[in-house]
Structures are given as C-alpha cells and as structure tokens.
Image 1 (tube, rainbow, N blue to C red):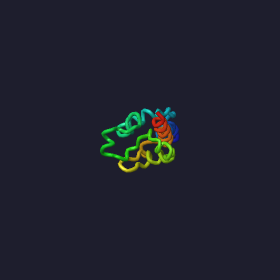
Image 2 (tube, one colour; image 1 turned 120 degrees about the vertical axis):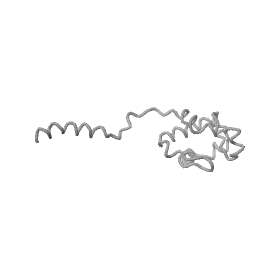
Image 3 (cartoon, rainbow, N blue to C red; image 1 turned 90 degrees about the vertical axis):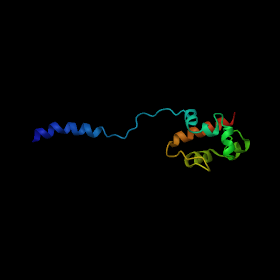
Image 4 (cartoon, rainbow, N blue to C red; image 1 turned 30 degrees about the horizontal axis):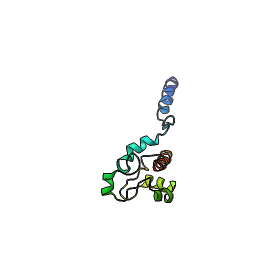
Length: 113
C-alpha cells in the first residue's frame, strides 16, 4: 500500500500543477488595434465620427472637437469606455484597466490630429 501511495503521489502533484490560473506572460497593448476593433465602426477610424452613424446618433463624440478636448478628462473617457453612455455599450467586462487606459490615450491622440 505504501509503495502504491509513493507511486501515485508524483502523478497527483503533476495533475495539481496543471490547474493554474496563470494567463502567461504579459503582452504589449496596441490601442490602435483595440480602437479599430471596438470603436472605429461608430467613431470613425480618425475619431471624427462615422458620418452615417452621426445621422442616427447625433450625440456621437468627435474627438477633435475643441470643446470635447478641453472639457472631457481622461477619467471621463475611461468611465464611458467601461460603463458605456447613451447608445454606446460599456466594454469594462471585455477590456482590462490597462487596455482601457491605453485606449484613452489613443482617443486623445486621435483628437489632436
């Protein structure tokens, strides 16, 4: 019995090690890819807003609008990305905070063009 236990123990330890929750090494975030996949359809690839979408959603943000650029803070942008606003869905469940922060910086750079 003791020899059976000694033979099975390493297998149990090996199997226990296979149930890790480690996501692996951190990967760099490319906010332009996230923007293209999740935002550009409505906000346009350049951040000015898709003209057809603006017809049905008049409150769609134009990131180059000087009023928006001065009045809206990074925290405001992050909150809208996380929770959504008006017709925009929230992406807090799909994006980590570092990705949301990187996306916020990308949105700011779009508006500066």
